[in-house]
Image (cartoon, rainbow, N blue to C red):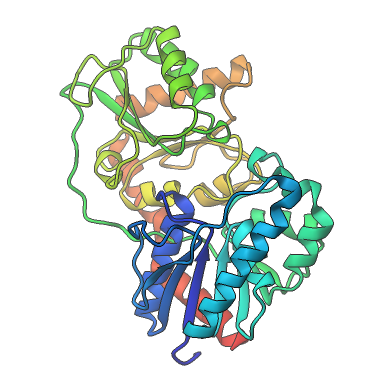
Length: 388
């Protein structure tokens, strides 16, 4: 096993806590448990209060001005100089960058540290990663300079190898893992079946595709409440859509509220743990860390089978199955497919009835075992041993 290493976890920003930020926080914890010294660095204003912790400290390297696309390389150069100076002081053995902007800056910074790119989100069919499709030769050149490119699921690793012609031994995957936090359950109102949706309110998360199905579900008589945990640029549009669909908006304790926008919270597990099911409606996901987090809480899952296939890989080993034993893998909602909508309605009804709730929860916990920290620690230990 590799001796004590100094490992730098690099992010573009940690201003909000989303899936990538939670992965980095989890990695900092596990690497610390493995005996390594870990620092987290981001390109944030040093005055901003850090939201992640590591045993070697959390560092804001400064926020370079966002420049127009044609001048963006100047922005990256400025950030790389800040990173180079930090690495000269902290002297990491390994730098693990997260998300494309941090990947590029890591390579531009040079130095003798071993470099790993940890890839979280898909490139194809993802509006957030259009540039990575348009600039494929540049992205491929950058990724080929890393000692390892590691994806969070096997389907995402396959996508990256195909897009950027990466050798299989250099581009592999390590499944994301989850640390289960303490839970102080927020119970639903009596007699109400609560479902939970967790994510940023952005186009690729596709809440707008789910809401018409939810409106039909409650309109047909279900006494149910959908709790939305998250915020983002499409919040106002989602609220307007909900009102147009005739959904009753309200507070979390209101038994008549069919839809509750809670916003981003530090304790999503308190809402997820007692829910009938977590709903994931995304058009694209690298993995969907929230799936593993829900399963570790014993929460059933109804999720969209979106590209590149990471959601299905998390929930089942069967490439064609709908039922998972603790919910279902369903078509991406909102495509105007009546059969797909009917499938969602059927599974929502099954989850709301809770007839198989105990079995579903037990099956979710069993599936979650493959995303345990110990499994990831062994995989990461092997990677570090090979590199250092």
